Amino acid sequence: MKPATRWALVVLAVVAIGILWMLWSQRNQPQAPADSGVAKQPVAPTPPKVEEPVIASVLFDFDRSVLRPGETPKLDELTAKFKARGSVRIDAVGHADRIGPAPYNLRLSEQRAEAVRAYLVGKGVDTGSIHTDAKGDREAVTGEACKKLGPEKRKNRKLVECLQPDRRVEITLVAAR
Image (cartoon, rainbow, N blue to C red; front, side, top):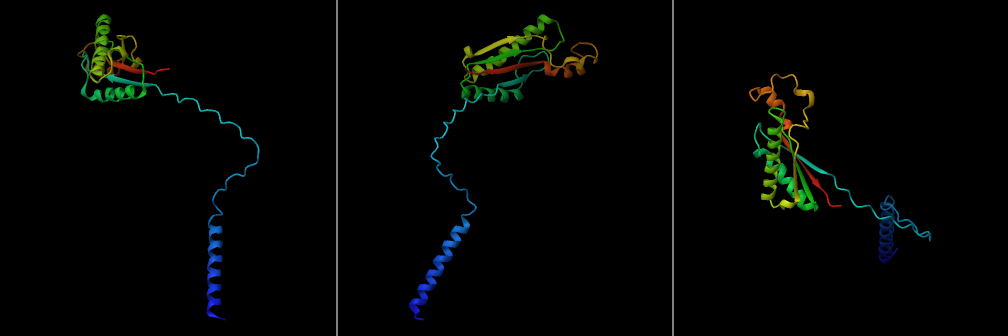
């Protein structure tokens, strides 16, 4: 056999092996569907994404309406979400624990809501976008958990500590519709 013929057979064998290898490696890949000539159904538009409500709660010290330094990151995050979402309003509702007279607690809860408003305005939120309300001690979250801890006085440290979750401002972003 002539050397040119041998080389031609070797090249032909290499090409055949290459083609077989290519076909073998593509056998597990998904195939495109064949066009059946049937009209495709239109795809319904996806409904707009409903944003999860954003609710935050900021806690206060006993008998105080000054924001705790550890609570301000919650308000910073809320401010960023407010600006990013295009929300139309922020609701800030102040609360107090049950220690003390109801009129005093109502005023204290108002002061707490106003402290949150002042902080948010300082972060660039328009004051007209913030709605405040005060509930005093009417909507406690502690329920019966702190009932049997002794007299309802500021000197009762166990009770003051137990009622901590009631000393709060609840903030809600109200989304644009």
